[in-house]
Image 1: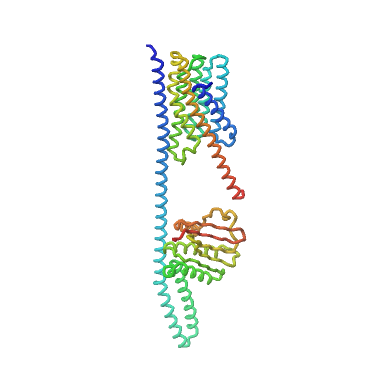
Image 2: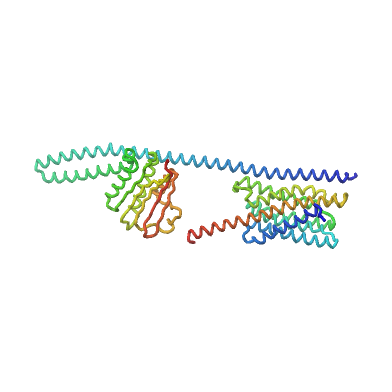
Length: 271
Length: 233
């Protein structure tokens, strides 16, 4: 068989090579566009997952707060009221025993009365800690003031509060911020060895609302602070982290050994 | 006097080959392992090209160098893709497969030794092997979705260049001896020019990949050293 004419063969070869090059180019183009599409799908999926997690988190916290509120009310209205009534009745019995000049019985009644008084106080403080009624009625600033007053009553530390909070958040956000502050104060009272004072600051600067809790205690070990990631160890710190996530806020801790601990929670507040 | 297009393409191919190798040597220590093998491959191409030119200048046949180039390419590209794919099955199977192909090429070269003719079967096997490697890399890209911007991924450029050039080279490999036997030297030169055009694509992409790879490692090193300073390490 004779070979085809040179020019004809060359033309066919060029067309063949061009077609194969086109196929190669198309394959590369397909990989690029398909990979981009898959990445976008993956991104959308991750966003949806993150949003779902956020909703789940908010729902869990909301359920937890409802349950706390219910237990707090039950304690306050049920056991608290019963104890208060019993205390009143004990007071009447004490008056009667003094009238009948039974000295021993009068002493016992006084002791029981004091114990009942302590029980009523404890139930009230537990009830308030479970659900801060002040927050729902008067807002975050008043609730923090009440929290600071209660903390000062323990006498462990001198707690000071400074508030500059002109644009209130929603009740759910205020409650989350209150819980964070409650946990930070509790941590300071428990772990800030050698601390003499504790400052709580709630400050609004433009669109940023900052909560600062600062003590002058023993501080954290270098690995746990100094601008590094916050180590989430105990249940309390985990609860802070969850609420920080829920608020879309940023948690930052600064500390040096023996120089105290400063915790910042920063969030965008509505303009 | 103006040089003809085939000559210009030959010079351009050589310039790009040397440039890619020079960038690779300059940044060799900063390069990831896969791109180091690409640099070695470019160096080997320069060596083979130089020997082929010397033989050509002495009017001696140089096509016997093709099996040497193909075997070296087999092994170096396999090492490149072992590091790029990080796929245990491929790491286990590839050396055996390449050994088998090497044995075939050696046997073919020894049993039918022809210093003045192409070896279409060897060249086609080489092209198909290259296509397989590029295909496996693209499969990994789509399967794992770890690369966010493909144009910034050095190995994407390597695989894309290999895919396009191997497909373009298939017909040239298939008809190389036929053209040599039946048509004029001018047609052979034109076909050789197309081959050089494919070489230009490959060497530009290799050079670009090496440049990207060295920059990416440099950025990563800068970030690490910044973090180390921040953490007082």
